[in-house]
Length: 280
Image 1: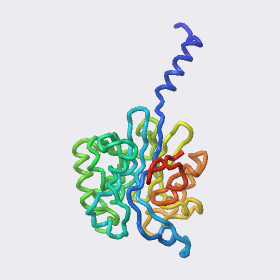
Image 2 (image 1 turned 45 degrees about the vertical axis):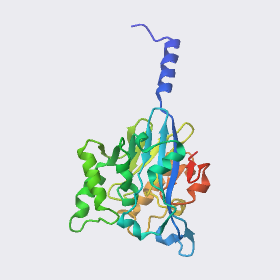
Image 3 (image 1 turned 90 degrees about the vertical axis):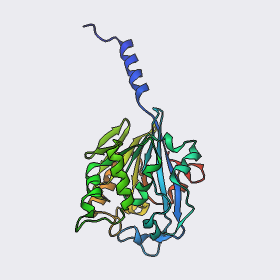
Image 4 (image 1 turned 90 degrees about the horizontal axis):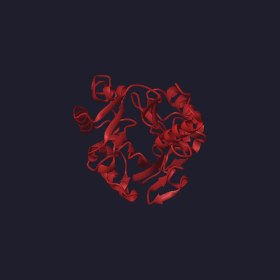
């Protein structure tokens, strides 16, 4: 066998680089609560006299490989569970994509961080999307949560039905465990147990690694002070905090860790359109 020449090695290296996908990451707001909340309602031992503005959002991972990946899918009108909030400035999650020149059928994948109503209800409006959810989270969502002693708070029955239907249609992959690269350049991690086995997403962009934490961190105050979510926000307070510590080791700067509901996100990154920022 002839040794690999330097030229051949360089060509192979360039080919490998050219095949490595590059992603851009966006946060898209589709609704807000019209009233600020005391931080203590979102963070265990958080201050009662300080407030936080709450937004509802989805995240787009746009690749040069033809992939348009959503993290979570938002919720649609008419959902009974949404009445616990004073929702304002609502537009359908698929309509927010128009601000980036995309349509619902352009979405190739949806990574569900967890199956609470405000993150899963919109999956049915993306006809070409393949769904990724943790296996243990799925099994609890469609099974144990509805048994005696189960915890079904935050789950909407209509979403259970549509996820099961999508699974039977072959459009769901059950991710089995932590630190899994499910799409080239996109990894998921578990540990915070916001739901039974929720996951967060790590994306390799051209410049930085970005973590889309979703509700594995509700608001920045938890991340800044390493405090768990308020009561009912996690199955495991210690796991929730340890997960945030771990996130900080996975990125070059904590500013690239993006919580699930903090309106500050839309003032902390470059504005692309109304209610849309680029995470960079």
